[in-house]
Image (tube, each protein chain N blue to C red):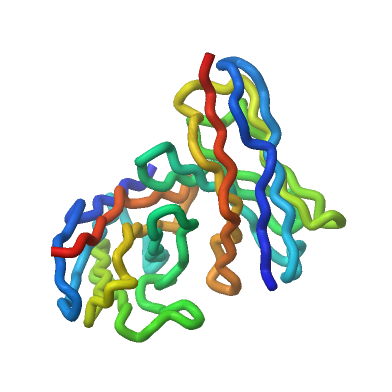
Length: 116
Length: 107
């Protein structure tokens, strides 16, 4: 059974850091590009960052560039999102996903709340 | 960034209805548009990829089409379990961008 399980969300003050993890199982993680997509409360979906299968290529939306870092450990089948200098507008549920028609897998999401 | 203008924002429909929604890309995205379904409290699910290809296991009442930069998603025979918000997403260039969503509600 394919699973993507996010963890690491929670309440954090503005300006602080948080690191999300996404543990994959049931498919060959190292064959897939991986992405983080977020959804603010009651809002739509927003693509955040993407990493190539080998980890050598990364892409970010402008609003997180320089603050967020996507990475992966293929030996552990785990995706990460290091989030620094967090802002209130980063408050959202963060999903990890393959975004691939060769296996479109999504996690259940982890909620990040940025508030003082 | 490419803007995906999705319409309508919401629709009131009845079971058995034919439902059509649209996304217009602000520039050429080829056929690199996917359609997702998100039910309340759940993660999104891929239904259509590259404009018109049905994802594995998706019922054939869901279809997608393209005309230039206009993309159409259709549910031919609305079922109660299809109540959800539907999003288009372009994957032609970074950053990938989603439409604002179309919410289907029962009339």
